[in-house]
Amino acid sequence: MNIEIKKSKKPIKYEDAIKFMEERLLDISNKSKKELLWILEHEEIYTAGKSYSEKEILDKSIKVFKTNRGGKITYHGPGQLVLYFVIDLKKRKKDIRKFITLIEKSIIDTLKYYKIETFADKKNIGIWHVKNSNIKKVAAIGLRIKKWIVYHGCSININTNLKKYNTIIPCGIKDKGVTTLEKIKKQNYTNLKNVLIRNFISNLKN
Image 1 (cartoon, rainbow, N blue to C red):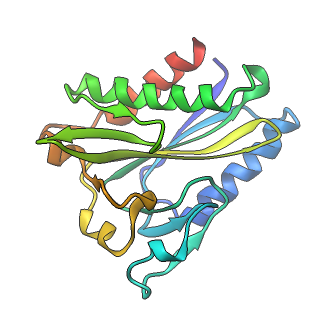
Image 2 (cartoon, rainbow, N blue to C red; image 1 turned 45 degrees about the vertical axis):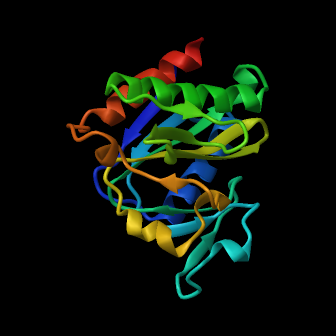
């Protein structure tokens, strides 16, 4: 499969990542560059998608970057693995719901590799884990589609500082919490990015 895989070692500024993806989208549209999968961590930032509400910002002193992806407000920062992609759905089925299912399956398959059972929820997009009857989000998904090219991506909390979520209503969901993989199960997640990429590419072929 003719996809460029990019892995950044240093944290990337959110604005720089968006600019890079939008440039790649134009390049893919005019067939001058490959599709992209990009693994990174962000510098600390709160981002608000197209459907967010000001009421979801509990601490008005925080700075929030308004972005063009779908979804509501979330936090990015150290300890959170982000997988961005710029994928041309014109080469595949023009079905955004199917593509979201592909992302969900890729994350669920990846966490299953680490013996962690998670699930997707059509009402509340993202990947969820249940412990002692408490449902908490461990991975978030936010997308934008332009010219049938889909970009932005998903994030998985590995050992993210959960206190950062106290200043917002994450993804606009009040009755469920946020967790990390290390809270669920302490183990080595160094290879997580490679397992996720492998599953994503495998699911993209199907």
